[in-house]
Length: 440
Image (cartoon, rainbow, N blue to C red; front, side, top):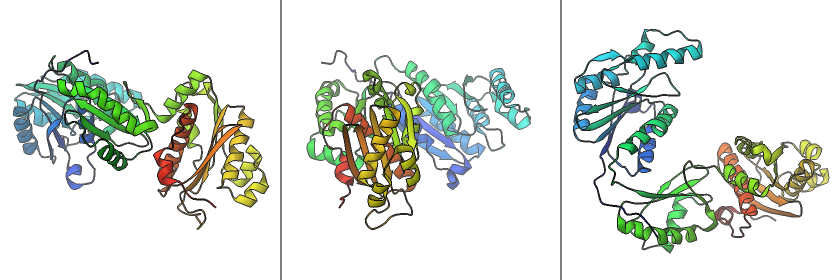
């Protein structure tokens, strides 16, 4: 039973101001506002207003003045660079009635940034150090332009870079923690996040509509689309919602079944991380035998520190010759059934297990396209084999995606099938039900 309470209290209002001619002309698609809103939602805050303006000083000053007077938190994105159309610092200084000065902390950051790259500072670079006189610096680990913070009347104003990876780090490590620290003590939002694989948003919503038609309004159910994992969020800001949340979460997990990979506590993990955690606990070693994915499954495993404890070798056998030479796949099987066949992926899996002395294997062979398909094996056909030497399981799927998307999804399916195998999960995943390809 819940041991804490949620008291009703007004949350701070948040507005976003995005600046850039490229955003107005469509040369750049705005993904930053979605990123900002998503991270704010994790701490129980929503965006009430979003405005995008061109790089025009008068427009910026006008919007900053209005938005700062009608919000508690204003996040300004873009306009921190070295060129003449980067106007955020100047506009903010005019709107708040302060001078522009060279900020020593910004200068130190820029100097060190240039030294690391062997570059010489020039006048355009130094423009990034001329900031409103009363601002506080927000560190930028990934770029030349620092962010900065100004408290103006009742509004906290955060100025952030437009480069997405710079913005993401600044938000996650600097701004979101600061906003969280400043939230009212009695403001609380209870959030549960589930990682789900193998069900798309529309299918998931259909399942909920049909099986949980009376979902309570006190619990906000949201989806964060992602590849390959989908995130499902249950959020409540009321005591009644908190009371209802545990039993309704249990009902939801029952509907989603084994598609739920994990409940997230802290930073989300990848399918490969979840699998490796299982393998480490049981001291199990895994190997891969890949054709159509070109080593992508092995790559997803080895990008994780410590994976060598459970993954010692993988095999990329793209040609028939290499399938025979590296994995001892009989030429007769290849001649009789073709590379994209159940017999061949089983032989690939067994060959990888024997060559690597691993406990588990995943083998894949398919037609990634856009060429190479046939009536019997159209583009998107893939055979997968997985398991231990004495228990190899197989499935054939038809995944009519573009080449890279096909490879990514096959790799994810391979990792998920191993996850299910290790957990002794016997339910049939949705992607097999929907994408199984009938074979002769």
